[in-house]
Length: 406
Ligand code: ADP
Ligand code: ASP
Ligand code: MG
Image (cartoon, rainbow, N blue to C red):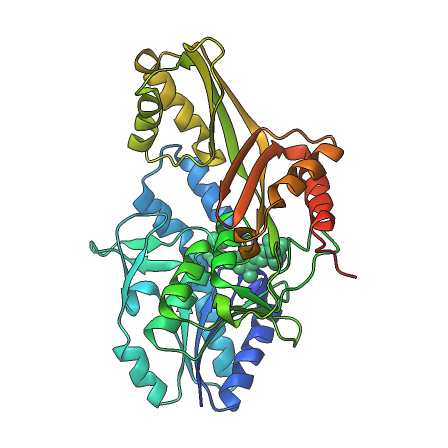
């Protein structure tokens, strides 16, 4: 008898039929003798709609009210899932974040989980009851509802698995596993049977939204056995495992993309000590994260251009912060472009193989795609290109690295 956490994403609970389908998967596990905790997302599209309501009501909204509003989709699906299970003869009870309680810090909109009380739900296990936990939400030290960032139900699932020492954490979604790249864009993408935590972490943080980044981080730190699988087909999914469990290591394992980037260039800033601090200080103060950075060589040793990226949602605030500090920074002009995409090639094999970057650069060049910014880490190379080339670049790189399905 195992303990299993089962997470169903938005498309898997998009309507009553799909909730019934997901509930049947839960019933199978219960009948096999397992103890099950379920966690659910809101119905597909609902969270976006709720975020839209917030934006239409207030531009500089109060994040505590944002959380009160956008967390509500999961209240509906957790109740419906519990009710459907009961109808199927499976004892079940729904739980909102505050009822468990699932405690977080008070960073509204992207709160971090700090503790999960297990006593009450563990007691119900003994009676054979399935706990259905509303995903994506928790409660702050001030007793306010918090949310965990978009895609946060993945993190709810892994945190529950860690807290209840589950034997498995199964993430049920609309694809049957993690692919070499987004299968909705590249038809030749291949399903990966096993991927290392490190590569999955890099894929997620570079934009592959199949798992929320923080969920992978948590699973890695707590040794949670994480699996991504289809809620519609009965098939093995993708296991996320330690690096040493992977026998045949590819040089490049996957390619991710993120449309959530915007580029800012400050033209002709002084090329002198302290200028980078003058630029990035105001952005840090405004809690804006900067991702890629390039500084061009200065032809005269006096002036240079500084280009960097921020998330699209932060672009306007970043522009305002830089305008407010124009005198201290001293730039001639500020340019920005939101029509860009970041494409990242990821693989642990890069540590020991040269030439991976060159393949990326030459492949993009052959397709006439100009690279605007480059950044690298030990197991990743990212390039920023015009958004219109997203599909072309992904497909060409997928072929170039030998990832195409046969
Ligand atoms: P859920 O609502 O179940 O959480 P998401 O939409 O958040 O599902 O994540 C699943 C989606 O992630 C897929 O439909 C797919 O388009 C996208 N995706 C992006 N990159 C990948 C990848 N490398 N492998 C699998 N899916 C990916
Ligand atoms: N419903 C939330 C979202 O759309 C959380 C999730 O789906 O994981 O971001
Ligand atoms: Mg998701």
